[in-house]
Image (tube, rainbow, N blue to C red; front, side):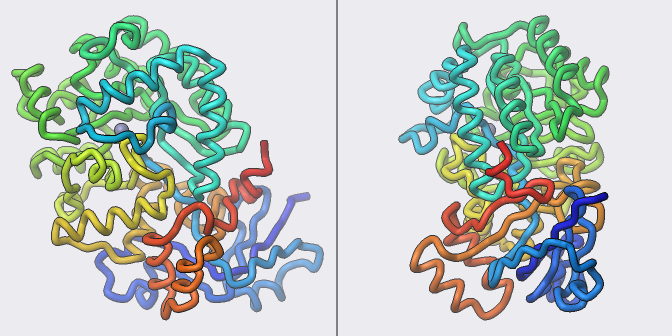
Length: 437
Ligand SMILES: [Zn+2]
């Protein structure tokens, strides 16, 4: 006998990319029910529709959860974040390469201790869920035990999570280095242990081209050949000094992306954070290969890295998701991150509609991660990950929410004023997430 629960609230989700639609609700790229019902059976979406009509069809013993005037949207997806850096979020005064030396590496060194890794992983997963993030693509550290810790924590909460051990064997502190051989072997063991278990997936994770020898990048390519359905997760063209250093370090390469391409790392399921300082030829190559970009606006602003060109990515048909990139990013809230995408695009004389933002944080991100067959919206049989939004956090957000004229307006003010205090709760596979562990 299946377990069925229905959630009644205003419900909003994307059916496809609404960015080019003048009126997404009219053409059906976005669907909205003012008084809607989301029916969940055994953790999957069973049905979605207007509450009054659906309630008549449901058996009388189905539990109906009344959420009042709250808004249900699909669970948010953070396509790029470093869990070991949660303790150095908001660290002052550096750009990327110095920031790594001064803050990131000392924080990551502590993950040699498995107890520390466990404590941080638990806190991190709870914070993701508190902020409405139900799927994340996560950097661990060079230590295999850091990967065990984050997968164990995600698994306890039934969360969908992609993670991997950082590969780095040069240009970083001695005590944070692996070797091409140990990096390969540890990754292989972690893939065998975790990939495909529960809702967990593995990502081969070279930090970036600068911190890997050519042999290590070759070994990363070997892992992808041996395990074709794992992800590749790394950084690309975040900062101008970084791009210049890559050109010096790999003098034979035509571009930064060409380094990764040379070693077979650009393919479906490859996730490249940032992608700011690059040309259309590389964007087109990414599109052809099915690789994805991650737009990390708060990090790009905070570290002064540059402005992501969403129009160019769209022109070249590249898959794009959004990422918090904590600790370079300044919030784990994907609502606020989507607000920051809007601000970065404003500086770049581009724009992003409220529904375009919703797409970037849900179905578009799911597509970037090749997970749109199982998450990203409320299509039938997808995993029932969702977020109940309410504007009860601050006086100003409540007031603004009450003054919103349309659903687009109501959504957009959450991107700008939102934080975890306005989340009425995250649900994973239909269950209230924070009650699960
Ligand atoms: Zn990053």
